[in-house]
Image (cartoon, rainbow, N blue to C red; front, side):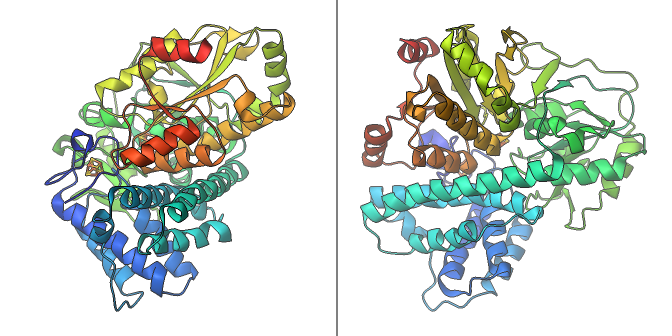
Length: 508
Ligand code: SF4
Ligand code: SF4
């Protein structure tokens, strides 16, 4: 087994024998076979809806912490293999055997495609598709088996970021046109008495379907992890039994799910290996799967969860819970529509010197001790700076602040990882109003990465020419020293150091 696709890879080199994520050698083998088969499919099969779906689903199920179920993976592999014929089958090991720099660039493209597949998958559930996005999956996969120069691959890396921006836009449209633009909303961390279900992952449609099926059944629904921003969507928030948020980010699942008297629905990653103590009340759906955990198929009949919730009965009395810093109210709903509606005000406050800087502190969370950097960094940001955040890294600080700069909340949660799209639209709008480039704005990106969606997002930010991104907690193992030097020279990417040093460097 050879896998180095995520931030927690062993010793920051590669996982062998078993993944730090819990992926076994057989699971890794099957996922490699799926990627190899998808390259053959892209090279040899007709480009049509069925094959595009196979590519998007196949890539998504190989993303970190999505699918640990060998029989699920084997069945998917068989379907893919029955869809093409290749006389010279591609083997992903050919990619791993390339020289350091070629392997690095092709890995960046592959992992970017995996992240983009996740966004495209969610958008397709609402029937939002794009010819440009779909055809790039073929082009990107084909490139993995081609003899291309470093320059050609470098151009494809940036094209991956460019097309991923379209995938992000598509998902933003799918979510906002279906459920409305997010509006500022407070979310409680307490759990009320009575039966409940916890929903985790990123798929808003799964949540919506579950809300509809549990309506008037005396069951409350709590979001977990990346599902938190759903409270701000008008067409989801209208359900009065969408009560609050349970727990924190994905890496705390085993501890947080252990003793709760309720079922849990996993709609996407990040799924920690499911412990025996809650396996009988865990449910997966879509491309997420785990051995011996019940899977809800694409008919999306959530009756098993509903029955389990009523059988377990929930808590007898209200449970007071808090976030990691002791706060019991989380604030969400600062997507592009809300923030851009006060852009004039932000510009005025920038002109008056009341807002000195805007920090975009976003990205994934994870288990590494070094990720404390982000909590400390946010705590040390001066009170005359705004903080925009997204994705699950925010759980480290999203219960801390309630203050404002004049009438603008100092910390604003834009949503899930895919809502980086909001961050991009907000900075573009501010640049337009201030008549400067994004680089000329007093804005700094401080990003935490973990899996392949965050890689595709980083590529999009680079494609947009955003420089001086501070990246952590570590640098990707799949980026060779030469390619890293090139990224540092061209885009001025900076590894995070200490909060004090980085703040001093940014604010001068
Ligand atoms: S996904 Fe990450 S942790 Fe899992 S095997 Fe690959 S590199 Fe290791
Ligand atoms: S933001 Fe990243 S780490 Fe967090 S749940 Fe989503 S994919 Fe996983």
